[in-house]
Image (tube, rainbow, N blue to C red):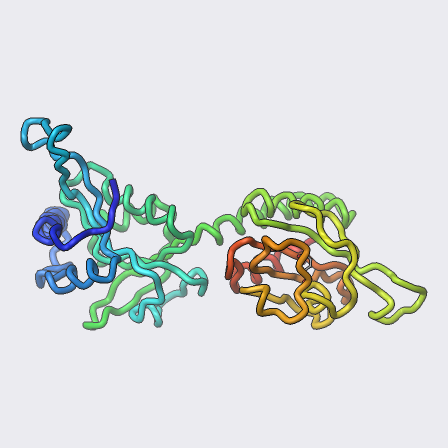
Amino acid sequence: MIRKAIYEDLPELMEVFRKAREIMRESGNMNQWNDGYPSEDIVMKDIDEGVCYVLCEPDMTDGGRSDITCKERIIATMAFIPGPDPTYAKIYDGQWIDESPYYVIHRIAAAEPGKNAASTLLDWAFSQTDNIRIDTHRDNVIMHHILGRHGFAHCGMIYLANGDPREAYQMSLKVNKYKTLYNHAKCYFDGEDDMIANMANLSAMIHRVFKFWWTGFYRVCPKDSGTSDESHELVLGPFQGPTACTRIAYGRGVCGSAWKKGETIVVPDVEEFPGHIACSSESRSEIVVPVWRDGHIVAVLDIDSEKLGTFTETDRYWLEKIVSHI
Ligand code: SME
């Protein structure tokens, strides 16, 4: 079981850190946490702020009567903290995967080897967020190994507040999904130049991978015989999700504005966007990406989320890259 730590856990937590230091020394990591880090004060502060988590298992040391006493033992812990982390503001000899909001894990420690306790904590962390940054000591081979196994990318070096260097890692589930999506989409686009077919497959792929509320295209179509932008309008194209409005005028709503500006628009909160066209009251945030062909916008990709702030620069980067191949 994973739960937030409480003040009564403090002595047991300090014992977990002591054992973790022992394991570090046995594995040849002689210098990390050798000044007694983390101190009781630091751990108390984590508990206070509700960011200290513990992994427990039933305590069998009383002869297996834990079913009656319901006693538990802490076997691992971590501080799981919403970013940004000041020590990660600068990275050296590399770069972070992206600048999307992230969580950071500090003070991850397991009391006993061979129980996959750190992995269990990492799996749980990814059930709470899709983007995590973490650092570890150069000599912490166990941690490097665990991070590699969980798909973390080594991004560079960071320096702690006391000046000590650490190896910096990040794992973004969103970026991993976009990378796979990009490769799949390119396979489909390479053998097909019918735009409607490609839009249909791309909206299906994006929608299936990310489970957004609405994913689809509006195509730039003639409205009358004129040649100006105003003589054209957006008409609903292939999409996934609930039914949507069929026609949007040039410059109207998020879609029409992205078409008029000729650039992607990220809307963290649709209620804050003047003129937003609400096809569904469930939609809370949105991204609209123009689709270019031969120097003209021929369509826009529109994605709606039922959560606030779903889309970031990462979505902009990857969606622009993907639709450029349509
Ligand atoms: N919200 C869009 C309209 C399209 S629906 O979201 C599918 C807009 O403001 O342009």
